[in-house]
Image 1 (cartoon, rainbow, N blue to C red):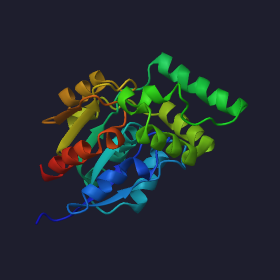
Image 2 (image 1 turned 90 degrees about the vertical axis):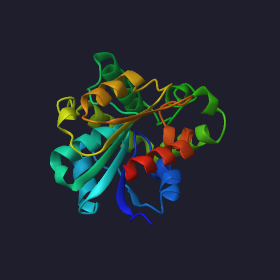
Image 3 (image 1 turned 120 degrees about the vertical axis):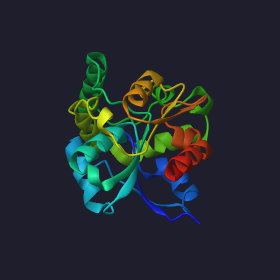
Image 4 (image 1 turned 90 degrees about the horizontal axis):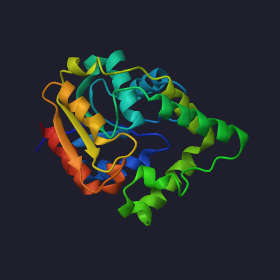
Length: 232
Protein backbone atom coordinates (compact mmCIF):
# COMPACT_ATOMS: atom_id res chain seq x y z
CA UNK A 1 0.00 0.00 0.00
CA UNK A 2 1.26 3.51 -0.82
CA UNK A 3 2.39 5.54 2.19
CA UNK A 4 0.06 8.43 2.91
CA UNK A 5 1.45 11.84 2.03
CA UNK A 6 0.67 15.14 3.68
CA UNK A 7 -1.37 17.24 1.25
CA UNK A 8 -2.11 20.92 1.78
CA UNK A 9 -5.06 22.22 -0.28
CA UNK A 10 -5.51 25.92 -1.01
CA UNK A 11 -8.96 27.27 -1.97
CA UNK A 12 -9.77 30.20 -4.23
CA UNK A 13 -11.61 33.49 -3.79
CA UNK A 14 -14.86 33.08 -1.82
CA UNK A 15 -14.17 29.36 -1.38
CA UNK A 16 -13.88 27.39 1.84
CA UNK A 17 -12.97 23.79 2.64
CA UNK A 18 -16.08 22.49 0.86
CA UNK A 19 -14.31 23.21 -2.44
CA UNK A 20 -11.99 20.27 -1.78
CA UNK A 21 -14.35 18.01 0.20
CA UNK A 22 -14.68 15.35 -2.51
CA UNK A 23 -10.92 15.12 -2.95
CA UNK A 24 -10.25 14.94 0.79
CA UNK A 25 -12.55 11.90 0.92
CA UNK A 26 -11.42 10.25 -2.32
CA UNK A 27 -7.70 10.56 -1.54
CA UNK A 28 -7.98 9.51 2.09
CA UNK A 29 -6.08 6.27 1.44
CA UNK A 30 -3.03 8.03 -0.04
CA UNK A 31 -3.05 11.51 1.49
CA UNK A 32 -3.61 13.13 4.85
CA UNK A 33 -5.32 16.32 3.68
CA UNK A 34 -5.80 19.68 5.28
CA UNK A 35 -7.40 22.76 3.74
CA UNK A 36 -5.85 26.14 4.54
CA UNK A 37 -8.00 29.07 5.66
CA UNK A 38 -7.30 31.92 3.23
CA UNK A 39 -10.06 34.22 4.50
CA UNK A 40 -8.32 36.01 7.36
CA UNK A 41 -5.50 37.98 5.73
CA UNK A 42 -5.25 40.85 3.25
CA UNK A 43 -1.95 39.92 1.60
CA UNK A 44 -0.73 36.82 -0.17
CA UNK A 45 2.38 36.83 2.02
CA UNK A 46 0.27 36.74 5.19
CA UNK A 47 -1.92 33.97 3.76
CA UNK A 48 1.16 31.90 2.95
CA UNK A 49 2.71 32.45 6.36
CA UNK A 50 -0.51 31.42 8.12
CA UNK A 51 -0.79 28.28 6.00
CA UNK A 52 2.84 27.37 6.67
CA UNK A 53 2.44 27.88 10.41
CA UNK A 54 -0.02 24.99 10.68
CA UNK A 55 1.28 22.78 7.84
CA UNK A 56 3.41 19.66 8.34
CA UNK A 57 7.19 20.00 7.95
CA UNK A 58 6.95 18.75 4.34
CA UNK A 59 3.86 18.44 2.19
CA UNK A 60 2.42 18.17 -1.29
CA UNK A 61 0.67 21.38 -2.31
CA UNK A 62 -2.45 21.66 -4.50
CA UNK A 63 -4.02 25.04 -5.18
CA UNK A 64 -6.86 26.55 -7.16
CA UNK A 65 -7.14 30.12 -8.50
CA UNK A 66 -6.25 32.56 -5.67
CA UNK A 67 -4.79 29.55 -3.89
CA UNK A 68 -2.27 29.34 -6.71
CA UNK A 69 -1.04 32.84 -5.91
CA UNK A 70 -0.57 31.71 -2.31
CA UNK A 71 1.19 28.56 -3.49
CA UNK A 72 3.74 30.64 -5.37
CA UNK A 73 4.35 32.68 -2.22
CA UNK A 74 4.78 29.50 -0.15
CA UNK A 75 7.44 28.46 -2.65
CA UNK A 76 9.18 31.79 -2.07
CA UNK A 77 8.98 31.57 1.71
CA UNK A 78 9.69 27.87 2.27
CA UNK A 79 10.52 26.00 -0.97
CA UNK A 80 12.27 23.20 0.92
CA UNK A 81 8.97 22.15 2.53
CA UNK A 82 7.05 21.51 -0.72
CA UNK A 83 7.43 18.01 -2.17
CA UNK A 84 5.19 18.43 -5.23
CA UNK A 85 2.89 21.07 -6.70
CA UNK A 86 -0.52 21.06 -8.44
CA UNK A 87 -1.80 24.30 -9.96
CA UNK A 88 -5.47 24.24 -10.95
CA UNK A 89 -7.18 27.08 -12.82
CA UNK A 90 -4.73 29.75 -11.77
CA UNK A 91 -2.21 32.11 -13.33
CA UNK A 92 1.38 33.17 -12.74
CA UNK A 93 0.84 36.65 -14.18
CA UNK A 94 -0.65 39.72 -12.46
CA UNK A 95 -4.09 41.05 -13.36
CA UNK A 96 -4.51 43.01 -16.54
CA UNK A 97 -5.45 46.66 -16.06
CA UNK A 98 -9.03 45.79 -17.02
CA UNK A 99 -9.27 42.91 -14.55
CA UNK A 100 -7.75 44.99 -11.75
CA UNK A 101 -10.30 47.73 -12.43
CA UNK A 102 -13.11 45.17 -12.22
CA UNK A 103 -11.84 43.99 -8.84
CA UNK A 104 -11.65 47.53 -7.49
CA UNK A 105 -15.16 48.26 -8.75
CA UNK A 106 -16.47 45.15 -6.98
CA UNK A 107 -14.77 46.25 -3.78
CA UNK A 108 -16.17 49.78 -4.04
CA UNK A 109 -19.64 48.41 -4.71
CA UNK A 110 -19.49 46.24 -1.60
CA UNK A 111 -18.34 49.14 0.58
CA UNK A 112 -21.37 51.13 -0.57
CA UNK A 113 -23.90 48.35 -0.11
CA UNK A 114 -24.42 44.86 1.19
CA UNK A 115 -22.52 41.76 0.16
CA UNK A 116 -24.45 39.88 -2.52
CA UNK A 117 -22.12 36.87 -2.73
CA UNK A 118 -22.07 35.01 -6.03
CA UNK A 119 -24.96 36.45 -8.03
CA UNK A 120 -26.79 34.86 -10.91
CA UNK A 121 -24.82 37.13 -13.24
CA UNK A 122 -21.46 36.06 -11.81
CA UNK A 123 -22.12 32.32 -11.55
CA UNK A 124 -21.67 31.61 -15.31
CA UNK A 125 -18.25 33.26 -15.05
CA UNK A 126 -17.24 30.67 -12.48
CA UNK A 127 -18.69 27.40 -13.67
CA UNK A 128 -19.64 25.76 -16.95
CA UNK A 129 -23.24 26.28 -18.12
CA UNK A 130 -23.85 22.58 -17.49
CA UNK A 131 -23.48 23.22 -13.75
CA UNK A 132 -25.11 26.61 -13.19
CA UNK A 133 -28.55 25.21 -12.32
CA UNK A 134 -28.21 22.49 -9.73
CA UNK A 135 -26.10 21.37 -6.79
CA UNK A 136 -22.77 22.79 -8.04
CA UNK A 137 -24.21 26.27 -8.42
CA UNK A 138 -25.92 25.98 -5.04
CA UNK A 139 -22.63 24.93 -3.42
CA UNK A 140 -20.75 27.88 -4.94
CA UNK A 141 -23.35 30.34 -3.67
CA UNK A 142 -23.36 28.80 -0.19
CA UNK A 143 -19.56 28.93 0.06
CA UNK A 144 -19.52 32.61 -0.86
CA UNK A 145 -22.19 33.38 1.72
CA UNK A 146 -20.16 31.64 4.43
CA UNK A 147 -16.93 33.43 3.51
CA UNK A 148 -18.72 36.79 3.52
CA UNK A 149 -18.07 40.35 2.48
CA UNK A 150 -15.24 41.29 4.86
CA UNK A 151 -13.15 38.30 3.77
CA UNK A 152 -14.00 39.09 0.13
CA UNK A 153 -12.45 42.55 0.53
CA UNK A 154 -9.33 41.11 2.16
CA UNK A 155 -8.94 38.49 -0.54
CA UNK A 156 -9.44 40.94 -3.40
CA UNK A 157 -6.82 43.27 -1.92
CA UNK A 158 -4.38 40.38 -1.62
CA UNK A 159 -5.00 39.39 -5.23
CA UNK A 160 -4.49 42.95 -6.47
CA UNK A 161 -1.17 43.25 -4.61
CA UNK A 162 0.25 39.87 -5.59
CA UNK A 163 3.64 39.45 -7.25
CA UNK A 164 4.32 38.38 -10.81
CA UNK A 165 5.35 34.73 -10.52
CA UNK A 166 6.42 34.05 -14.10
CA UNK A 167 10.12 34.18 -13.22
CA UNK A 168 9.55 31.56 -10.52
CA UNK A 169 8.20 28.96 -12.94
CA UNK A 170 11.49 27.78 -14.55
CA UNK A 171 13.03 27.30 -11.10
CA UNK A 172 10.44 24.78 -9.90
CA UNK A 173 12.15 21.45 -9.29
CA UNK A 174 9.34 19.33 -7.80
CA UNK A 175 6.84 17.16 -9.71
CA UNK A 176 4.30 19.69 -10.94
CA UNK A 177 0.83 19.37 -12.44
CA UNK A 178 -0.92 22.17 -14.30
CA UNK A 179 -4.66 21.67 -14.91
CA UNK A 180 -7.50 23.84 -16.21
CA UNK A 181 -11.12 23.67 -17.26
CA UNK A 182 -11.56 24.09 -21.00
CA UNK A 183 -14.31 26.64 -20.34
CA UNK A 184 -12.52 28.62 -17.63
CA UNK A 185 -13.29 32.29 -18.31
CA UNK A 186 -11.34 33.74 -15.36
CA UNK A 187 -7.97 32.01 -15.77
CA UNK A 188 -8.33 30.57 -19.28
CA UNK A 189 -6.37 27.68 -20.78
CA UNK A 190 -3.83 30.10 -22.28
CA UNK A 191 -2.69 30.95 -18.73
CA UNK A 192 -2.28 27.25 -17.97
CA UNK A 193 -0.35 26.67 -21.18
CA UNK A 194 2.08 29.45 -20.23
CA UNK A 195 2.77 27.76 -16.89
CA UNK A 196 3.03 24.29 -18.41
CA UNK A 197 5.56 25.46 -20.98
CA UNK A 198 7.69 27.32 -18.42
CA UNK A 199 7.81 24.70 -15.64
CA UNK A 200 10.35 21.91 -16.24
CA UNK A 201 8.67 18.54 -16.96
CA UNK A 202 5.24 19.77 -15.91
CA UNK A 203 2.31 17.40 -16.40
CA UNK A 204 -0.85 18.90 -17.92
CA UNK A 205 -4.55 18.08 -17.78
CA UNK A 206 -7.57 19.78 -19.33
CA UNK A 207 -11.05 19.18 -17.90
CA UNK A 208 -13.64 19.12 -20.67
CA UNK A 209 -16.96 20.96 -20.31
CA UNK A 210 -15.66 22.54 -17.13
CA UNK A 211 -15.25 26.08 -15.88
CA UNK A 212 -13.11 27.57 -13.12
CA UNK A 213 -13.88 25.05 -10.35
CA UNK A 214 -13.00 21.47 -11.37
CA UNK A 215 -12.97 20.12 -7.78
CA UNK A 216 -16.73 20.84 -7.68
CA UNK A 217 -17.65 20.52 -11.36
CA UNK A 218 -15.61 17.37 -12.07
CA UNK A 219 -14.94 15.90 -8.60
CA UNK A 220 -14.17 12.32 -9.63
CA UNK A 221 -11.90 13.39 -12.47
CA UNK A 222 -10.12 15.91 -10.25
CA UNK A 223 -9.52 13.24 -7.61
CA UNK A 224 -8.16 10.82 -10.22
CA UNK A 225 -5.83 13.46 -11.67
CA UNK A 226 -4.52 14.36 -8.22
CA UNK A 227 -4.02 10.67 -7.37
CA UNK A 228 -1.84 10.23 -10.46
CA UNK A 229 0.09 13.36 -9.51
CA UNK A 230 0.66 12.07 -5.98
CA UNK A 231 1.93 8.77 -7.40
CA UNK A 232 4.17 10.46 -9.96
